[in-house]
Every structure is written in structure tokens, then in C-alpha cells.
Image (cartoon, rainbow, N blue to C red; front, side, top):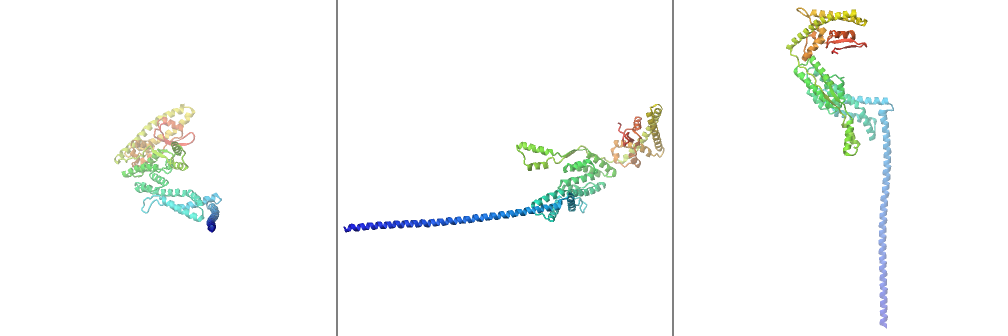
Length: 496
């Protein structure tokens, strides 16, 4: 019985101990979970606090940035408004006339900056320096920026645009002055019987600006004899094509060099060349720039690509296609070789003999004409009789002049001045047609004067018709007459 009681107690204690251990384990587990939960909760709170701090800091930074941006925008806007006022004061001035005067002042100042010498200290031609001009123009622009006090890039860009446009006239004026200085030296060389010179070719070749090249080639062309007011020269310059001007200049230069090399650089030879140069220029066929070519090129490219071109590409095409014209010379300048001096006497004799022969022939014609006019004065109508009186007066004066001239040409010491004065325009012109070298020959004074002698003066068209009918006035004679409308006309009779 005692053993059974002891066993029961021991089992009971075992159960009690097991239960205590279980309770202790649960308590330990709860404590461990609570500790872990507390730790996790603390970590979560810490993370939340950190994130919340960052968010708040970012919000504050964004607000500060926005505030600073708004302040900067207000400042930029205010600065631009001040710049606009500055620009108005500078070149608008609320007065168009004052604005124009302001810009004229700037051009005058820039002209001083832009002036470049065309002839150096050694007397050689030198190129127009476009780089120097742009550098000086940029320096003046910066001075004006500081003077006006612009603050913003937008206002500076606006001013730069206006400045470039408004001061372009200064560039044109400086280039024209440079070219004129070149032209003066080249003209002196030509009149002194010298060639244009390699320094001119080098100077133009060293000029990178097309406007300057065109102006300089124009200077060379006019120095070689083409008149400055020749309308073809202006049209050639307007083609905006330096290659055309170069071709014209080089053609004239080639023939002028031949004259210099031949040694015939007297006034007559140069005058003949200058006349030929103007004729050469007048016969040039000009093709003007055609802006429509650019539109055609754009349309063709769009058709090939199957889509429209962008504005930049179109702008590039329009700035390079159809902007320059072309020219074609259909003749060459005339260069007349000098006449062999040993033949000059023969031609002088031919001219004077032809003048005498013309006078003798006209004496007979005048005699026959007087008979016809006398008959018309008796049997003609009142109008014909009035014309007959005018004709008889004219024929009488003419007959007297011819007789006196022929009398002077007779004898041992003949004087041919009279007959060459009467017929020089015709007989000398015929001689020069037969021998072009006579145009530059040194002729006797009386023949040179006769070449440009006064024309045959006829009172009116009615008298002129009868003189042509009677063969007193022949093809080639220079005649002055008064038309029915009262206008006086002078020119050679061409047989019509």
C-alpha cells in the first residue's frame, strides 16, 4: 500500500513539473515574440520617420527651387523689359526719323573702321580683307552692346540681327571705295601703255567675298575702257556671279595685253580698243537668275523621296539654286594691228585723189541738178516751185564751195584741205573699211580734221529727197536735216 502511495506522489510531481516546464516554455516564447515584435515595430517606426524626413526635405527643396525659379523668371522678365526699353532708346526712339539718323551715325563710324587701302606702300594692289571687316564690325557691335547696356541673350540676339542688317550698307560702301581706288591705279597703267598687272589678279583671287570680287572685276573692266554707265556692265554685276565678271575681264585683258606687246599704245590705238571693248560688252547674251529653279529642284526631290522636305533643307536649296545668272560672249573684242608706215603715204594719196574725184563728179551732178530744178521752177506745181527755190539756193552755195575746193587742189602746191573737208566723212570712211589699220594710223592733220568734218546741212526732208534723187548725197555721207516735226537729225545716209 505504501509503495502504491509513493508511486502516485511521484507521478503527480512529474506532471506538476512537466506543467511548470510547459508554462515556462510558453512564457519564454511569449517574451521572445514580444521582444521581436517590439524590435520590428521600432525598426518600422525608425524607417517611417526617416522616409518622412526625406520626403519633407524634398518637398522643402522643391518649394525652395520653385521659389528661386519664379524669382529668376521675374528677374529675367524684368531684365528683358529693361532691355526692350534700351533697344527702343537706342534705335527706335519712338521716332522713325531719329532711328534712321542713329543708324546712319553707326554706319559712318563703321565706315571708318571698314576703310581698307587697295594700294600698299610699294604701289601694289592688295585684296579686300573680309575677315578684317567682320572683325571690326564685331568690335563695334560689342562697343554698342556695352553702351546700350543689354542684359539678356534674347535682346542681344535681336540687336545683333538689326545691327547686321543696318550696317550692311557700310560694307557695300567700303568695298566700292576699295574698288574705286583699284580702278584709278589700273586706269593709270592702261593709259601709260602698261598691262593691268599680276598684282590685280592676285588681289581679286585673295578676296573671299563675292560682292568684293564683283566690284573689283568691274574696276578692272572699266579701267580697260568699258564705260562705267554701260548698262550691260550693271546687268553683269547684278547676276551675282563673280565667275562671269572674271571671264569678261580676262577676255578684255587678253586683247589689251596684245596691244601692249605690239608697242601700239598711243591714244588712237587705245581709243579703238576702248570702242571695241564697249561693243564686245554690248553683244554679251545675259541669262538672269531664276528663283523658280529652286522650287523645281525641291519639287523633284520631294517626288523622288515621296515625302515633303523639311524647312531647313528647302532654305538651303533656295539659297544656292537659281541665285546666280550667266552670260555668253557672242563676239570677241577687235584688235587692229598697226599700219606699216611705209604704206601710209599711199593711203593718204588715195584719200586725197578720191576726194578730188568726188568733187569733179559732183560738179557735173550739180550742173545737171540745176537744169532740172530750173525746169521744175517753171513747170512745177506751187509746192514744187517753192521747193525749187530752196533747192536752187542750196545748189548754188554747194557749187561755189566745191569749185573753190577743187581750185585749191590744183597747181604745183595743191591744198587738199578743202576737198577733204567736203568729202572726208565719206572717202576716209571708205578707206578705213578697206584698210582697218588706218583707224589707228597717225594721219596728217588735215585728214584727221576732215575725218570728223561737219556734216552736209540740208534745210528739210523735201530738199533732202531731191538731193538723194539727184545723187548729190551718196551712201555714207553724214547729213544734218530738220524733220517735219521740227526735230534736227544728224547721221550717215544708209541708202534707205
